[in-house]
Length: 356
Ligand code: GDD
Ligand code: MN
Image (cartoon, rainbow, N blue to C red):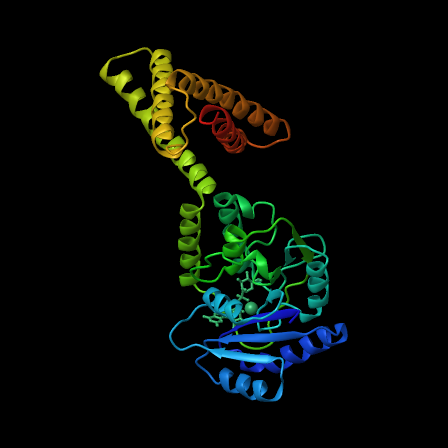
């Protein structure tokens, strides 16, 4: 079997026939062996439509679930049944055009590990979403990319449309919560190359979206779980969290020195910053890089950490000034600077302070 399509369905009765017809028109000319796995959780008569098709069309297979529900887990069950060397996941509602399948397949055959049709590369569009969904979708992508470094270079990391070579997920323990099967694959899979192809995400003709507030919450839970299971992402998250704790320590010490000990402003400010730095150092040493024994004592690590933090402050200010130069307000420029310097100091600390 060359190619398996895995298509999750939930109440899509009117979309099944046009979908399968368009898949045939797109794939039959390639002369390859392919199959379609529908994994269905519908509560309407979609399953009857699917069963009828299964009886007549040899490429169609149906797995109807009673005990489990949910888009991402449906795809995992589809992967378990699929026989193809290459796998493509797509929605049933024709928002993902089957006409793209030959191009996806060709790239997989050419040796690309993961192929993602993208709404956000040159030539693509997400015209099928309303303005609120667009904003939610954008926020979801940005949060995902901040939390998980493997998503950062991928413009449409929350796509429900993608192809992969089967061995990308061979042995990976896929256990997604909710909808976003692709981020599970991108975080847990074994791959080198990812290609994105522009496409237009069009509006539905039949039925409606099943996206809900509950799925957005599930997405958040899914991210938390992936971060906690992925050591580099977990370390970066802890580093940022400890950085925030440093701000609280800094302010608390400042207030104590100013009002408790009537210290001079400059002295209070400098001492507060030093205590905060020590706080951050200790937490990072005990928690973030706990399992990293560089074999060096605090006599190396502490001065390194302090030095890196000092350069980090300089970077923040430089970035802020650069932003200011192109008209960005100072507070926003400072925020961008903090982001840059945090990333930089994380990178330095993980390579110099806590590593040989
Ligand atoms: N088996 C199963 N179980 N299928 C489901 C379930 C479920 O609980 N919920 C939804 N589906 C199926 C739908 O029938 C459809 O085929 C597909 O999953 C996507 O659902 P939609 O409700 O159409 O989602 P959307 O259009 O709002 O968003 C989709 O496209 C975006 C762009 O690619 C999703 O795939 C998003 O994850 C994606 O970002
Ligand atoms: Mn849809």
